[in-house]
Amino acid sequence: MAENERINGVPVTEEQISEWSSEAGSGFDVEALKKRGRGRPGRGAAPTQIVAVRLTADELALIDARAEKENKTRSEAIRAALAEYAA
View 1 (cartoon, one colour):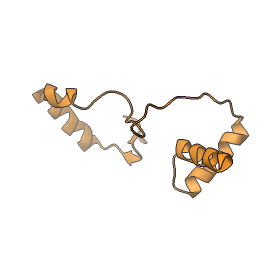
View 2: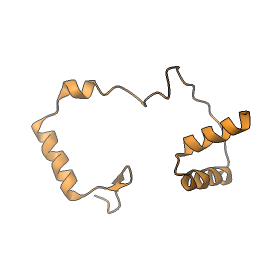
View 3: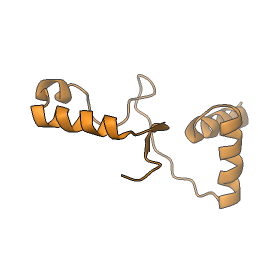
View 4: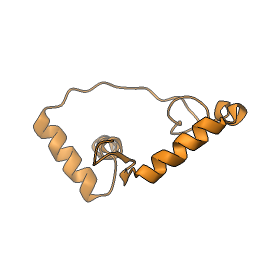
């Protein structure tokens, strides 16, 4: 395992890997796994659209810096900027 492996920012330990291995060896609850749903969760009641936008590395760096400063994801920062622009 790589030294800096992380899941959601949390370091993965050898102990965690051992637990996962034991869990996999004993089997999974298939019905519980089926209930998890597919894909990303929706943002509301109405369907959303994916809109492709091309940005330069500098533009992305600015967005990422702002998002980090405001403790947001890149997508949240972009949506906030668009909402402000459209208002």
